[in-house]
Length: 113
Image (cartoon, rainbow, N blue to C red; front, side):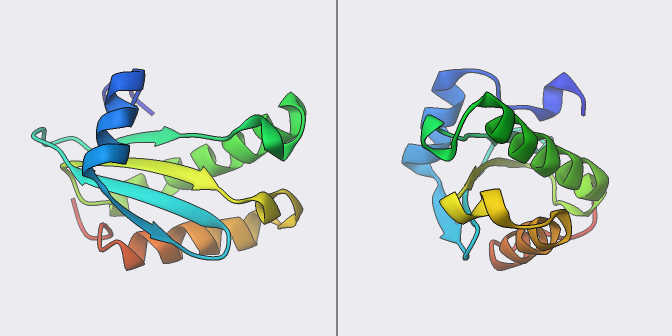
């Protein structure tokens, strides 16, 4: 994914948390904020309570790959932050993919670009 499509700075994440709307399902929390750009930017947050770095990186890599493969379906002009819940450690890739698509649908950011 291009650098222009990623949230990188702490200030950008804080803006999404403070000004955005949150949605959740069994496995994820999603913060959504409309931005002034035409590009959609995405960030991922996972805390140390999920296990060691190996576990956290595996979850993050899976989420990034799912979003990368489905990025063309996400509407432009949004900042999105994905936060996995504790039970995400035990679910399969297909379940995580279904959960991400479900939460994007709930947040109404799925559509054509």
